[in-house]
Image 1 (cartoon, rainbow, N blue to C red):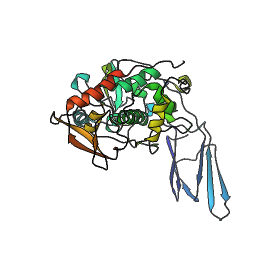
Image 2 (cartoon, rainbow, N blue to C red):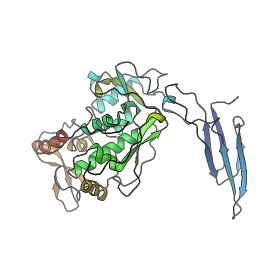
Image 3 (spheres, helix red, strand yellow):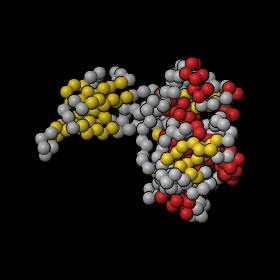
Image 4 (cartoon, helix red, strand yellow):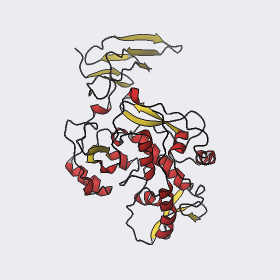
Length: 347
């Protein structure tokens, strides 16, 4: 009999091999695990791992290496449906207040046994990190809605790192006075499958919009809650791995190569930003400071620039400086209204 968890203890740390039951809505992902550990296995705890072979090899320096090969029939990767929410009622009240999630969306804590895919009728699931780290706000930005609509992607299946890449791209476009479009985004990214979630990976080639790659985000899968499905204007079905369409490179002429080159030359880090900053980008509408003050970018030379101006040289320092709300809305608001829903993904 196999237990849910098998732990191999080595002098260098732990390797966890996990087999879990998942919902029939999403398939098992069967994988072949191949570890190379520069240490001697001292003890194998829990039960013996079926069909696993441990081969000791000696390197040129005499150090032992352990190669562990676990066959896919016995080992499963944790899926989207393996995680239930750990958020409490009190935590949810504080969170919705901090991130301006309106009570009209009726946020509620999921049942203890519910995964993100088990949302009730009329509800969708959203992760707290979707707001905390991925910079999404209510209402969702037009660009985020365009991306979801283009890929026919359910918001509850969007990986939080994928959501962060969307906001990072939008922020970079706003800084450079570029209108973010889905085809321009697709010049940098393509869809990828991540254990039940859908995310985005960098396309092969030199185009890149971030300074450092983000591969992991701690403890986000266990923190989600329900809101009314009015959060998004579409109710798409969840993808399975085999049904996720191949995301080909956008055709020439569907986006501005000049804009792509400008973004590539002015990469920015994937960060969580302040509310004032997101308001300045047109992503948030929750800036409640004095009406005559909004954030302005200040460069190393002390010059300031508002959205719509050439901010490529003033991204390093960000402070609040008095300017007019009217000026910000004229630029950032006009940019938001100019976006269009792109289509054309072949299914």
